Length: 193
Image 1 (cartoon, rainbow, N blue to C red):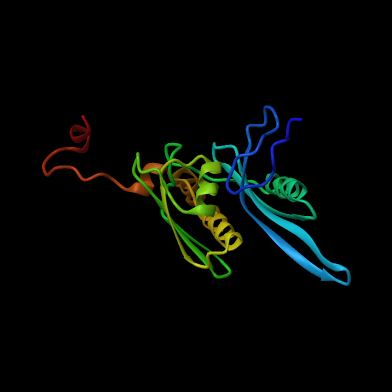
Image 2 (cartoon, rainbow, N blue to C red; image 1 turned 135 degrees about the vertical axis):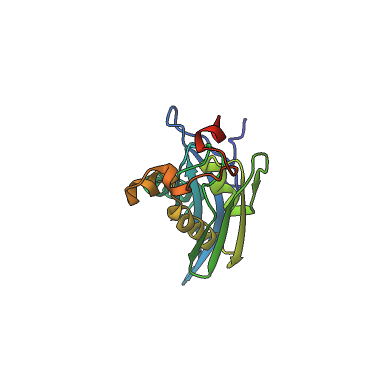
């Protein structure tokens, strides 16, 4: 008699529905007990991060009496609350940013090509689902996975691309960065040739 594969585990990818392109990662699962007259009733709380690895990511939490149902609820909530994050060259953030939620503080820094994802646990799941390949993240304060993920999302929502900033200010992208310095005595056109 063949055994069915077990549900559960930490930080693993689960099967995805065909053609939606969204992967989900289980960040943490917590067993909680409610003491009642006849003994204890156990329930499970799951935290899941979903993303299309092309700039969209979301998170969700779910509680149920069984692990698979908790994961399913968390995944549904995560898909409903997805956000789009602008990425530089499709691999890193445009600028450094900080995020806070409760006692959780995170600092996200853009990184050079080839750096990889330098982040621990819950933050790594967020970046892998998002599709960022080069980033440095530091978590300060709370190590609670829920607070870390929510702080990371608070930081990611502050991210802006140069194009969106220029549009908001009514300027061109080149005006944001200013003019480049030219060597003394050369006209600007000759310096770019």
